[in-house]
Length: 86
Image (cartoon, rainbow, N blue to C red; front, side, top):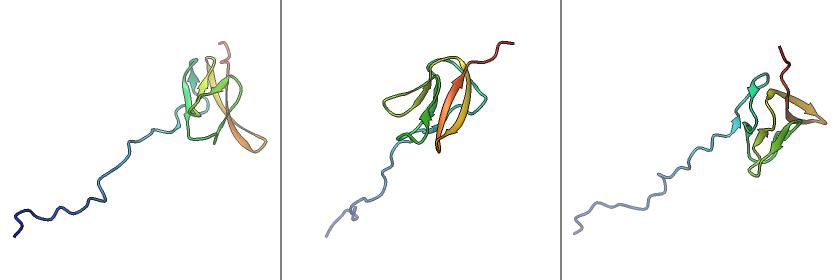
């Protein structure tokens, strides 16, 4: 007679780590050069003026300025415009 209770095969109990995707800075917020504005999978949002697309499709700021989301030719894009001098 068995002295251990049946373990069975575990089908549950695994989970992947969160990837923390999404928009990190919203329209009107001030960003510095190299700041990640959007983390995404694929080009849901395209890079606009003064931004660049990283190899993992993140969008980064090239200059210090203000974030602006736009729709151009039916596609969303994010740009960074220099802040006006006060």
